[in-house]
Image (cartoon, rainbow, N blue to C red; front, side):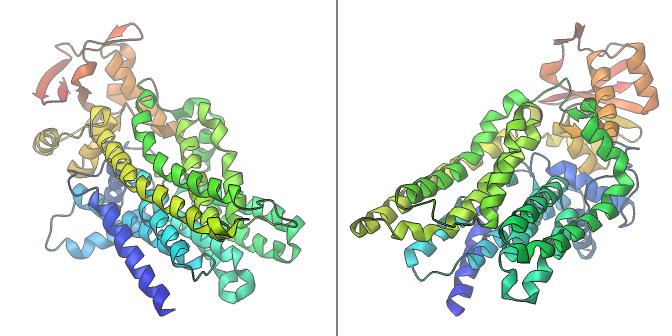
Length: 498
């Protein structure tokens, strides 16, 4: 036990250092980080309460995001507010730190709850994969902080389900864990409910004694679902049944996603190395073999991947879930590598696997850096000059801006912002985003002028490379006397609405 605790402490510290190291030279966390910091700011503006509607981020739209992480970030900010400036940057750094800690904790939970082994080389393989080749690294690069926190609770839930025969505490943890998942991240919550339904049917046919306990966990999931999502049923219905309420709109960034998506490849390759080694050195399909819950989870999550044509953002998350579940299942079966038919090959097998995994660590570093660079440039370009100018010069009304800078203006400067780029689900935010896109594309039309009046738009910010382009037969321009150019930076131009 003492040795395990030492290994867990080292794993946590190495994992945390490896994750934080990538952000040392990044000006601010990128991707969705500013959007999530805006939610913390919404809670702060509401005096620490969960607001019914947003006041700065898509003002007037219902607040719908599970609040646990944002409440924690807000509570952390309270004691710091007396001696440091608390705002958007502080919120983003806090969210990043919490996510990195939970990512490292997930690695430790997996390491601790995998089947015990006395083999040093087996523990080394587990350590390398969990510390350096986890798909969580990719999620950190695009600011998926709530997802990382929720996955920690999801992993705890699945492991606890696997050990319910070992005592009462393992029976109590799954219902509590699924509640925490539901309060942390929407997609992971719906995945957890889906997995529990799969587990329930699986246990009904394979392990009848556990069937009723699955129903208790499902009940916990339904409780948090009713508490959080029932009051927001309108959002759910619009997200599920209204195709116009989903997607990235006319300003699609999907064609640019490939450079970032490569960030998941080292994790996938690590899974491939281990799985193929196990396949070629074992009898995989054993008599009366029952799948573990992580193997069932991996198979179940594959079903979400084919929908990538309809919903790339959601399907990409299912790829990440699949890799994580499959990696855990593969690590749990590492003992197969030490049972090849020819015992003389054992050392060779382990040496090859370790060598390939070590080679993947530099690949992981490069892939993570590339993904960070992608979410800090181009259509995601952060502009400190514009942030500074906005804080002192934009004092009233709503700002229409691309998500790349608009979410930072909202989180850091506290401005009311509607973005005309970005992926959204739900009719309210999408309606505002599409209205903002119409203002940018056809700035002088009666429809655009109506949107400007409805949403009290005072400023329009556009990327320089968009000006003069033709979209839907309209040239993007902001002519006088309706608009006046008030600020130009390296990446953006700002127009005031007269």
